[in-house]
Image (cartoon, rainbow, N blue to C red; front, side, top):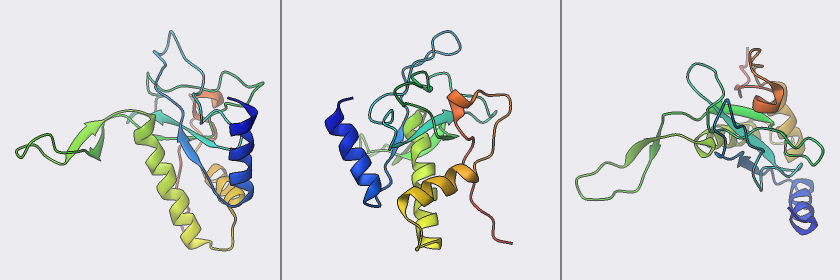
Length: 158
């Protein structure tokens, strides 16, 4: 990723725009983990990995293998066998389909960011990022490079 894009993403974050992106689906785990894909590999973009219902890293989910250039995973979310909206292919087909991918995990994080922006309107994008990471649930049996701070969690008001 070139300086031009890196600069744009950094300026977006500085201007209160939190960009959350899917880490990519190029891995074939456990034998062949792949690095986080662009644009999620930019340090000013929150990169999201996918986990399954057993709290294991999804076999396809890319990981943070390029630590020297950024590209770390920040958090993870469910991304395997997610019921999602889907365009109708025919009059008889439904509007939903079960899909897997880091693109299925990312909306969980984006939705959480939107909730926090609503709940904490005085926080800026960087502070929302920090809040998401701070309250993520660590997954002890998985590597940080694969799941970052862990599974995203909504803050529970007592």
